Image 1 (cartoon, rainbow, N blue to C red):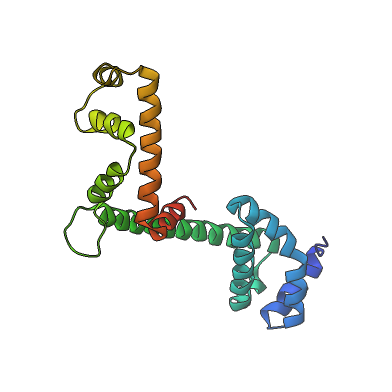
Image 2 (cartoon, rainbow, N blue to C red):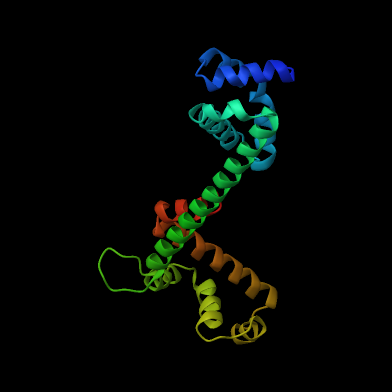
Length: 197
């Protein structure tokens, strides 16, 4: 990457300050890669880095008159870019927080128990799913969740081994989880994935 001498840079900056587009193109070419690497280290996102580099050069062009007073363009560029990058990262963090809050509120509304038609009632879904369990899995699940029995107590109650109780419980919970996923819908699942984005 070519970086102009101090004298050449001063002349270049003066030309850009006067509105010379070809001088600005030269300045852009001289510093684009350097700035891109610097911003990428700060953001760890190629897409965001590219956006910031373009924004920084746009800002420099808009405020080009100030370049006539700049002694070291590289230092000036780094300061402008760093400030813009930090502002962009704060904005991204705020946006992600707002999206996460929105998703959480949607999920809370979806899980909220209500009798209004067209809304999700998770208790009804769970009861319907439990009714679909094979008899032994259903017994194990209900003794655990409704009656509050421990697994060893369930084993004694049903006269089966502790390992069998554990197996039935794992299968029951897996079935219920899959059943709820299917019936709550793709929308809620996509929101859950979106949180982890």
